[in-house]
Every structure is written in C-alpha cells, then in structure tokens.
Figure 1 (cartoon, rainbow, N blue to C red):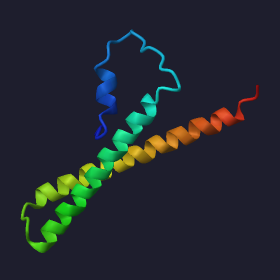
Figure 2 (figure 1 turned 90 degrees about the vertical axis):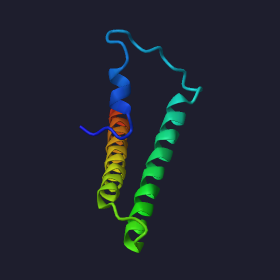
Figure 3 (figure 1 turned 60 degrees about the horizontal axis):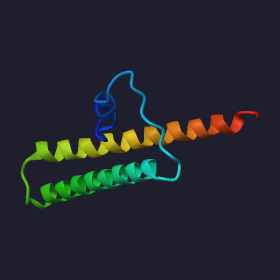
Length: 99
C-alpha cells in the first residue's frame, strides 16, 4: 500500500499496546495535522504540474521523474478522498445514534 501522507508509518512506529494519551478538543492537534497534510498534497500537485509543463516545453527530459511525481500526487489525492469519505461516513453514523 502506498502511504504518501505517512499516516500508516506513523501508526506503525508507535509502541504496541500503549494507548496514546487523549488529546483535548481545544488544542487543535488534528486540525494542525490535517492542514499540514493538505499543504503537502498541494505541493505535490504543484510539483507534478510544474514537472509536466517542463516536460512539454522541453526544459526537462526525464519522463520517469514526471510520471513518479504525477503518481505521488494522484496517490496522495486519492488517500485524501478516502479519508474524507471515512470521516463523512463516521459523521453520518453519529447522526443516526439515538440518545
């Protein structure tokens, strides 16, 4: 599995069996992490676009590098969309819980 955002590798490096401490809702860790990942995805998309433009204008001749940059950007975007779908699904489930 390709992990362009580094989420899986970060989870695997944590010690097994040791729960992570609960983070308060007000400290913004999730928001900060999400924003950083969105910025990385945006950079990947821009790099892929620049590499494609450079290839088309003749400023670059390594098609492999362009294909790799494009594939990384595509994988990162697909991972982001999958995350969005999971969050929306979890929210929908929470809405349907009767208290």
